[in-house]
Image 1 (cartoon, rainbow, N blue to C red):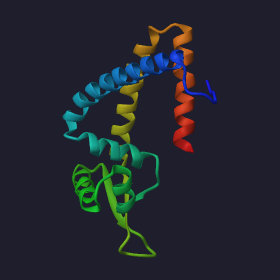
Image 2: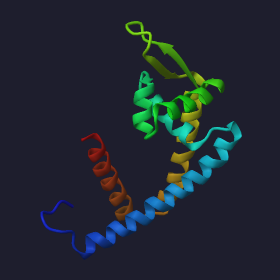
Image 3: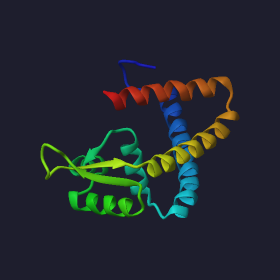
Image 4: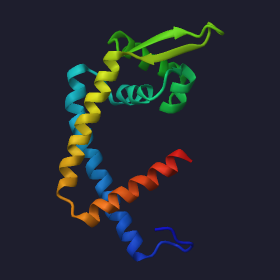
Length: 151
């Protein structure tokens, strides 16, 4: 609901409920991810990097550092470990051999797809208990957050 005034008590209450929902679902999903990721010895930062890579043709080391909020050296360490596990591969740009391009491998894509499925299943179970109004609120909020992220 877009208004030109400060959010009223109802909006604040809804925002607090939504914050609780986000925290609960995040905790639930992270716990499930933790179990799955421990099987492959992939850390959360490594997994988050894989999710970034899964939606891009490639990322440079500076792109990775920026997206992850790390130094280039720390990003290199993340990529080194993922490369050893064959989740990513590096190549040099043809126009500038100093530019390193990092791509996700088929094995990395499989891991991300599996985790997305697990998260979707967790969320489906949570949402199955919602009434129509609650589900509509979640959908509306999802669209608003997505619009903000794309702006």
